[in-house]
Amino acid sequence: MSLLEIENLRVRAEAREIIRGISLSLEAGQVHIIMGQNGSGKSTLLLALAGSPRYEVAGKASFEGKNLLSLKPHERARAGILLAFQQPVEVPGVRMADFLRRAYCARFGKEIPVLEFESLLQRKMDELGIEREFAMRGLNEGFSGGEKKKSEMLQLSLLKPKLALLDELDSGLDVDAAPKVAEMVERARQDGASAIVVTHYTKILRGLRPDRVHVMKDGRIILSGDARLAQKLEREGFGWAYRSVG
Image (tube, rainbow, N blue to C red):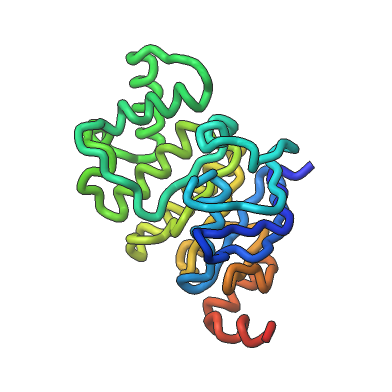
């Protein structure tokens, strides 16, 4: 049984159809990359899978054999689906540490004493090379692109999702930081996480070992392949892919 099974998924926002019949199967432990130019529907796909109320969704989607579309957003998160937003919201006055503790309790369905959680959080931050003061800052408040990715990677390590939906993972990263983030995703996979990574660049792929690479255009997946597909896109751009399917 696949971890995630999508069949003829269609997503609308008001009168506009954005996702036009996507089918996709992801096994436990796999990393899939979704590429495509801006406006191809990549981010909408992740938001729909996470349960965003902005969209009307039709078709079929199952997660661990259960009907994903019947679950509310918080139920999907509790089941082990983590969405990392392209532009996370700033929440001044709410410390990262407090947010992460509440997220941890919701994810695993149990309370954890403050001191026990702080010990766990510090251990995870040390493993990731994140300075401890980082957790005392306001949630995403004034974060640089690299700091937002630190927050995402800390959530990956702490919340241990079964499926991570990572939107524009390399957004705001410099050339040196991208491989480090890719390394953290690989570490999460070793801990049992699967991932769908959305991007329209290839720099993040140099540190990842994707099982499948998909190219989207106009709300559809038009090409799929292994890591060699991403390498060809890096050399030749998206034009050849679009032309090859008419």
